[in-house]
Length: 107
Image (cartoon, rainbow, N blue to C red; front, side, top):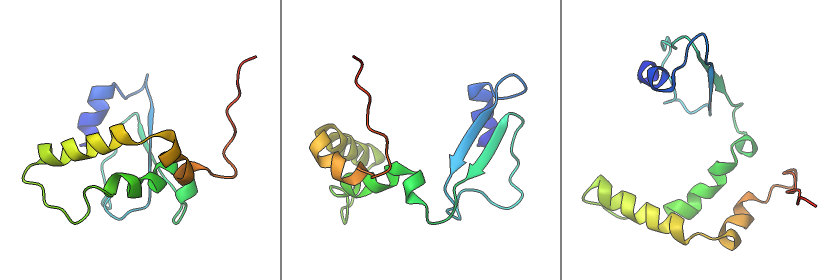
């Protein structure tokens, strides 16, 4: 999979890609062959603040929890619709880190 990804993005001597992964056990077996031009960087354990999207999963999971979907397309449609309906007011409480920089408005 990594070799295919490296080919698709043109990773190699002239283009270097850094993939940031959490430390979940399924993110790479021991002895994983990492192609030239790809570097894997693993986040420290228990550091959700370094992966802000982690706090959004409950919002996306809500309409799919404890449901069965006959096809992947059915699941995809429900998740896509949920994402379309999310607005800033729903997202903000899950992403308002005290240390996150405030946006700068051009003057």
